[in-house]
Structure formats: structure tokens, C-alpha cells
Picture 1 (cartoon, helix red, strand yellow):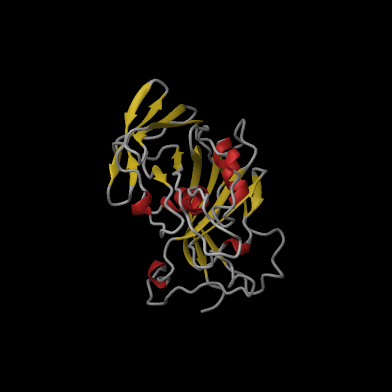
Picture 2 (cartoon, one colour; picture 1 turned 60 degrees about the vertical axis):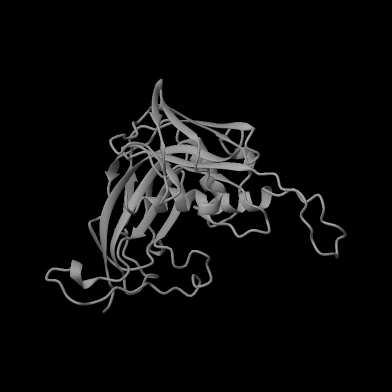
Length: 306
């Protein structure tokens, strides 16, 4: 799970941060339009960020409250630390405990998410007034385990001229269709942006470098190691622009439930900081509690030149 957060948390956090920042304040005392803003009232909002991945531990579940608009947002300040947080696997109760390092909730490490299973999320806690008790709920049914039909190649060589690729191209992949799933998510992650030669046989001291494209420098996720997309088909080429660096990569295909698919379609893995709260899946608050199954494959991308 050391690198799994980028798939789930990159996925939800940036959008929820904006939602909390914008919706957590009641500006009843702003004065005139040209005057100095004065915030007299603060009404907290609460959000859940939870994604269950089939076969993986139950962790990185965030329970957050909004902060005042005149206060800098931090995960530490927004985390709801004292709460009764549980996940029900059908009728079995799975208690979650707070992780004070990551500011998230997690189950025992022996717990693993099952395919085609109903999970219910429930968090009960006191609001800031210390008297009002609030309960947030969410529900997801995990998809069946997805699998490769035609997995990515173990090694790829970046072409010297990407405008004149061989035909047919070598990057076709396919996977099993899932009943009830209409959109599949695809991601590539460079697992080591620094080293390159140590993965060669025999190893060398050559360093990695990124693939420079003139139209990418101003993108908000320029330095993110993950690139993602969404597909409505189960057979597709992996386009060369899916790679930001050379070297070792992990490619993944996700079969999401409707909650995570709704989130992804709107935000494109957090790149677009807009989310219609009506499409959230949390009863009593903001956010998303969803699930997905996924298949992964490790690929090494050779440089087209030293």
C-alpha cells in the first residue's frame, strides 16, 4: 500500500479540500460589496473520503470537517479524530481506528476488501458545539475482480518519432468486462523518477529523465507521477502520452462502482477542482464512499536515446 494513496487519495482529496473551504463558512456579515469582509458566523460541514479496493486493506479513510475561510487548511486541523467509525461487511462489523500520523481511519491489517460484497460506512461523532451528535453514512457494493485479457507488454521502447508509429502499434491492452460497469479507469505511474540504469541488465549508473512535451509544462499535475484517464471500452491502446518519465512503471485498470465513477468523470483524478455535491454518496455530509477492483502490470519503458 506504500504507493496506493495516489490512486485513491489523489483521487478525492483535492476536490474535498476545495469543497470544505468553500462550503464551511456562512458569510452573514460580509458588509457592502466594496468593504472589508467580516465573517461573523461559522457553520461547519463534514466530508468523508473513502475508497475500497478489492483485495487491499481497508485504510486511508478520511473523516474531515471544514475550517473557517480565514484559516489555512491543513489535514491535521480538519481531521475528526474522535469518532465511532465502522464499516459493515454485509452484517459483520469492522471497527476502524484513527491513525495520528496520516490523520485517517483504518481497519486491522488482516482485513481485506472482498469482491461483489455490500459495504456500509458509518461514522458518529460530536460536532464542534460538543452537544450535537452527527452520523454520516455511505454504501457501496464492490465490483467483481477485473483481470487482464491482453496485459501490457513487460518492456516498451519509446519511439524516436512518435508521429510515425509502426502499424499496428504495440500498445493494445484489454481486460474483462464487468456487469454494471460502464466506465473503466486507466492509470500509469512512474515508480522511480530518479533511477533508470539500475533496472537494466547489466545495471548502469544512468539516471532517469522525464519526457518533455511543450503542452504539458503549465498543467497543474505536471510533477505528479501518475497519469490517468477513463474508458468506456475494454480494449484500447496505451497512448505514448500516458508516460511522463522513462523507466519502471505500473499500469492499472480499475472497474469502479457508480460513486467513484461519478467522482472521476467530474474531477479527472482531482485535476478539475469541481464536484457537484449532489453526486456525492454520503448521507448527512459531503464526499464519496466508493469501491473498485483493479488489475495491475509492471512495465519498463526504454529510452528512445541516451
